[in-house]
Image (cartoon, rainbow, N blue to C red; front, side, top):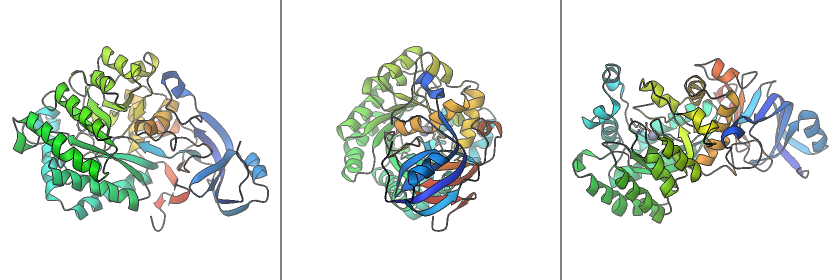
Length: 432
Ligand SMILES: N=CN[C@@H](CCC(=O)O)C(=O)O
Ligand SMILES: [Zn+2]
């Protein structure tokens, strides 16, 4: 395994049970998702930001010999897993939408609220009205909650600005948080989230505005790694979505797509055609669409919190995706102020168990290595592996199954981010 190092900066001992996807730095497909490595009475040695050794504690200790250890912490017999990754969030936004709760509960469909100028467009108004500092403050608080819940890396989309300045404003906030907050953020440009009111009935013109005015600026300032579009009936058509994603590729932005969430429009097929890294939602994806994902290595990112919160009977066909199509399913919160206002990935784990019929092992894989792969980071994060970033979550739980079983609470005891203690005893560490 690894050669001995001069010094270990942090040694995590007394890990009751360490569970991780196997090494490899690649997504885990279908049946592979239930295979995880489990080590009882384990320890992890960290130097700088990297894992240098892990395994049974007696093995790690004999490997260490008389190596200098700067700091030792005990996991107190708890469960230790890779830091969770949330690969689909709409973190940066102004305002909230509790005023739409009664409309939703009275059965008004999500797309109808949007068509009446509410929904996403309501958050666009609030985001445009908010200062950059106010957006930063609000997003930072949500990011703290995510960290306290054991999440160490997230993806964050724009898409509530829908004007050049306001899209850039959202993306600058995410960039700023990436450098100031312990959680790593990777940004997605989503100017194609809705057609703004000033372009009502001129959606093709808005698409050209995205392509000709927004994308060059996003690329020029290095503000995003990915490009996403809400490909949905009444929002962006297949051809408009294709125009946006293909143009994004010219600017080096990797495609993602909100596909077949409500209507089976062919978004999954388009994801395959444009070579997207991931396709999200997929409740209404056709068999042909799932085949296109499998044939083109597209990762399905499932968002069971959204179908739950929208009160939908339909769920993404996770079992078929894994069992029949051998797809590498990932899970995410979809944290946003409308369809899924929760930062809790642990709630999503419970819903994945309940409604997607995923096993605890599959859920762990979907929230770690496959989630990392959905944002292009599987070689760096998503598993406990020598050489990988030391992103580690310590949970007050005796087993993986305990997480979806004892639901509605936060099990996180500690979080180590890039080798530094970011959360301990359920609290943010001083200075974080
Ligand atoms: N479906 C489109 N976009 C978001 C919801 C955004 C909102 O309602 O504000 C989603 O992924 O669920
Ligand atoms: Zn979304």
